[in-house]
Image (cartoon, rainbow, N blue to C red):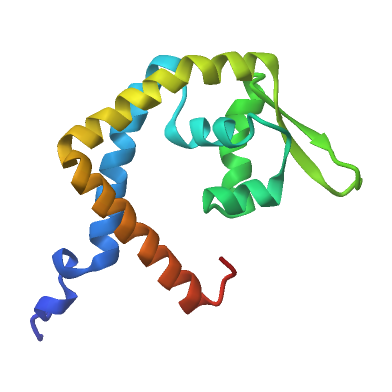
Length: 151
């Protein structure tokens, strides 16, 4: 049996490294947001829906999720009465709308999100955060082009 090459090792796989770091960063945010009874995904849904009701498909795209994943993440928010799914102008269109308790929960969670953000910012420093954001945005642009997606 041939030994795997070094290039096949998880430690040299860009996707592995990104996913590992993403999971750990998510754990930091989830830890802080737990005080408000939210996960990072749930917070993101509430945050991106706070100004106006959002079309389900558009919200999924903004979050980088497919509709099935978004629907799965919405279920606990609907069950808790934090969001509701309403019909749009077109009967086929489904919109996500924050309820008053959802707005209250989001308001309570925002300082917790800022606290999680501060943890990561302190680890990387201002220059490190700017560099990371620049590099991630650049990678996202390149991947969109490669996959033929609109920006």
